[in-house]
Image 1 (cartoon, rainbow, N blue to C red):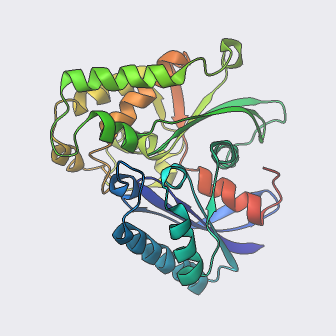
Image 2 (cartoon, rainbow, N blue to C red; image 1 turned 90 degrees about the vertical axis):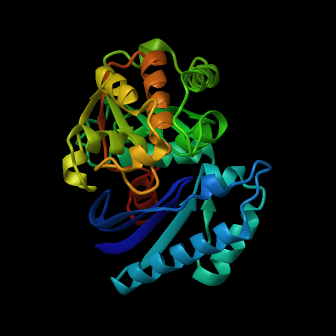
Length: 310
């Protein structure tokens, strides 16, 4: 039995998992979400301001100290799309190394997809040949993975996420206009291309992970706070997504942020994330999917502290 931490620094949130486990399973001790606003801070020329770096390195330092005080033998940290986009990512990595004493791993899209799949299916009891598909809606990118049992197979990382789409097509301070929504949806369709052969997806269940699906599950069930045990397995249908889009469109970001189930900092991005997921449902011919509260951080934990080959 090992107690350890895995931290995922995303484009909009930092997800921190403290868990215990043996072999290929883990038990969550603490799982937290903190808004980091890195994607919002990233400039048009791809630079993270020093203030954003300092704030996030300090946040990471506190999380690592908390985990070590709680008995973590080790902590592994990774980052994804926002660091892939940042031209000064080495500056961030250097600050993490000097202040926190940890080497920050910047994952490729393929690595992110592999670890996300491993984490998303880690709570499922899958047969070795059982097929599962996973969609991870992130702030800076979206991963679509088709796997078998615990092993990921074909995957695609799309350069589109809830934060990046919002910054390009919507407003952070004004309600979305119908023409803005139309342009966003057209952009999502254009970057999707032919994701996989259609027969790969026929009659195969879909698992939905990431901040957007989790928030939609909370809204569907009127949860006022993050409760992983109530989110796991919540079904989202095409009709649910259309209902949510109608609920979000035309409303001010502050109104969306004020919804009881809305996590801090997500109100301004929830419309773009939901539109992105809806377009994926169309192109992949999905009628419904089930939300998982697990994801990249769980796969990262298993890769470093378990025996799962990912």
